[in-house]
Length: 169
Ligand code: SF4
Ligand code: SF4
Image (cartoon, rainbow, N blue to C red):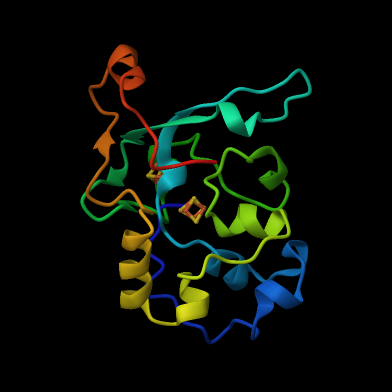
């Protein structure tokens, strides 16, 4: 979530692991490699749940306001490895809590694979070229880099005025 994935090595990844294995069978490095670093999950959002606690995806609204630890210029968490020291409620995305996180954006690889969909065409695992992936993500209007603002000092009222349509669940 919001981490810089461009420097990850492919050494420990099994070929086409995302097609050949269920999410529950992935190694830690494979699980981590699914994140495209878009940072969208670090945005503040308004989530509606039904009585059973299921997320109503159609009612999720994202703002362009991020968690205080986000570097809004790069789109990466400023202290990803030690983030829970700074933001204790930063959600660790796991196979166990993924079903409750259907508020994730539609392009998110975890959500897509959970739903039986393919990786987005621009995913680093497919292009194997970080620059090409960055360019294609930009063209697909994906990612928070350069267009988010920090929650620091922002009131609830101001935040409510900042709902955006460039992230959809
Ligand atoms: S939305 Fe998904 S792909 Fe994007 S940073 Fe969060 S976990 Fe990673
Ligand atoms: S601490 Fe904040 S910026 Fe960092 S990964 Fe968690 S939500 Fe994103």
